[in-house]
Amino acid sequence: MNTPNDLSDIETATLGHFLETGFMSPALQALLPDRRVFGPALTIRMQGDDGAALVDALSIAEPGQVIVVDRCGDMRHACWGAVTTCAAQARGVAGVVIDGFVTDRSAITQAGFPVWCRGRSPITTKPRGIGGDVNVTIHCGGVAVHPGDMVLADESGVVVLNPAQAQAHIDRARQMQQDELIVLERLRAGETLAEITRRKKQPA
Image 1 (tube, rainbow, N blue to C red):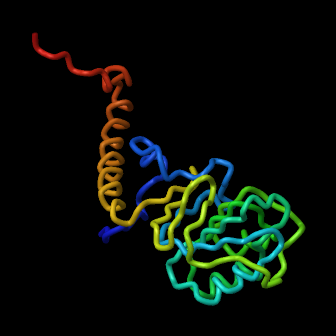
Image 2 (cartoon, helix red, strand yellow; image 1 turned 45 degrees about the horizontal axis):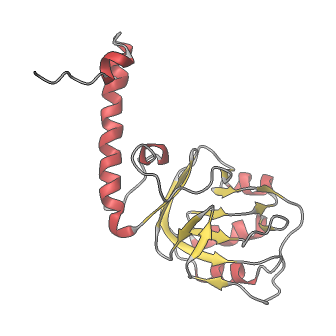
């Protein structure tokens, strides 16, 4: 039974059939493509090689949250690895979305922790404590993310939904996915896609 704002059966690609906004850059890819996660965003802004904000966030993260990290354009340092994965799992974090790089891919994969990122780097951040913010509005993958926004991530990508609008989008997507099953059955029965999608002629 689906509960309010339950996205466990919703595909980001279904939302992409009727939404244009809220989708992060396709450059953010899943390390574990078979996983789907959803939950309220715990946002982090990190600059350069300072990883202190992530340490702070991992100390207050709540079960079911999705950590979303704005790397402020840093294209050099990995902010996530084996230790942060362990810390996140210990807090019950659902997954992490990083507009940047990770390291220790094998350890992350072995732990089975869902991560979306731009790639990998051997150069890591350090807890310098120079700057950074937790639970503020950030930008990740070209999308503004507010604390508590609903995040859905799967094999196709990452989408961010306003909590006030999420349920309506979820209901529409769920109906579309049910309708698609009927379309697939008709295709297997021999109908063509043109026959199925052809608009009915209006009476004169």
